[in-house]
Image 1 (cartoon, helix red, strand yellow):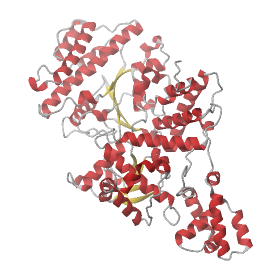
Image 2 (cartoon, one colour):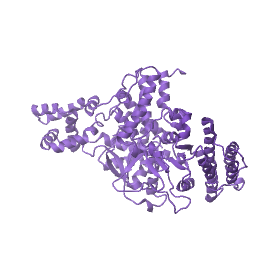
Image 3 (tube, helix red, strand yellow):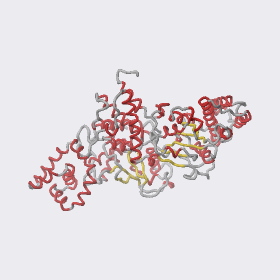
Image 4 (spheres, helix red, strand yellow):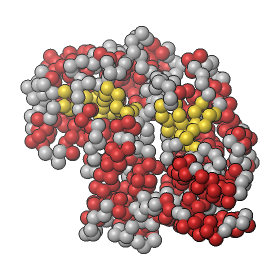
Length: 638
């Protein structure tokens, strides 16, 4: 292994196993690290499936795992098993550079539809012909097509006549290249020689399904990043999905809210689940313990390979990440120093030695709640102490509600770590069902650990884990701006909401604890006019969810997935360590569309107004890692 001056062999191997968390970076090595998710069998059916998940939830890895190349690699590259597979999948990643070339004022949308339908015919046929060649090479049983079949396919696709399988594959490839070249010069000539949608493809797959080698087999088209298709292009593919029958089916990977059109080319015909397809929402399939188990398997497999590469004993991810109880963390955050104020206050208020001794014996966080609650209510500590004795049930509930939230106020106004984000269960919650975020967190934590000359057998400290979580949050915040046309607005929205929830987290006593979600005032989206403040706010929230700045969950009312108004929103937990607020989905507040837009256009004033409405005061106090954005919060930067 090549060694650089700035990294050790262990760090380089770590980067290979955890740093290459995107399937595109891993290339063929993605299958060496493949861990089958619980929903994988649901995709291996003859029904069309739509796999919905945010960036980094594993859609690409799963779809590539269903491809014939993936099945071959996962199966240990055993050529003797290829002929026994029940299905063969053809993977295609939608390339934005290609599909966006098929739009513009040069042609009407109707003409673009015809062009794209022909283009996709060529793409699909090329994918199949690549498989035909691969199958013959690996099984030594060529899938030869008859002269009449090849002639019929080339005729349907308006290609030069081809009389054998090899010539057919070459003709399709050349036609695909020629078409892409033509599209860049589409204004110079009228489109001609276009095939009917599905023509050629149906003939090709019909012939393969009747071949003795493939009798009874299923064929899957695996379309990844479906959101990259233009709206009319989604309608074209929707039409194929709607009418795909016994010959082939589709498995689609798309981001949440990325499937913008559900209709076919017939505006009155819509794809409906479960009649036309099976919808698999990754966040639903991998929630709670199921995601924890999946993430544990993924990380432990990589950790085993890392340790094995250097002849070391395998380590377990849960053991590698040191964690705290809430009481232990309170001690680490200096609660004893804070409690001195409580005892001083009690003495000034005339508390007798028995009261002081009783408070001394209380768990530190419960004792601190007496002090924090008295300050928030403007009352005396001694009165809150007696209230605790008089209303034990109410006090027990209060402790349960506020114990975690008190941790966020212990180091308010101080430099350094204000709240620890450590332990495997916390990392899993920060990732919120996103396996890429899990790998980022573990990679960053291990890298910092190794850079401090700590070995793989030594547990990673809470300080390093917290720093890693802050780093990952900062890194993803900086990347937001380049993710979409809304990027700059998403960054501002996140900075503003992060500040709101950070201030609220630092002042929990006397208020609703762990307030870290919001929902919008009721309104019917179907009646919104374009370019109104309400419509702009909803469009922004859609983009924020799609690009994982926010996560959303069903509100209290039943709703269609496109009805943004009836969802609860939360900053993605991956940013919680950076801004310092709770990563746990808890309580929510109401925001107006005016306030959502204001958080971007008028951040300083809008943050102040929202906080004032919730009886909080903003100050210049910022967590150390957020200080680079101080000018933004002061309203002195764009």
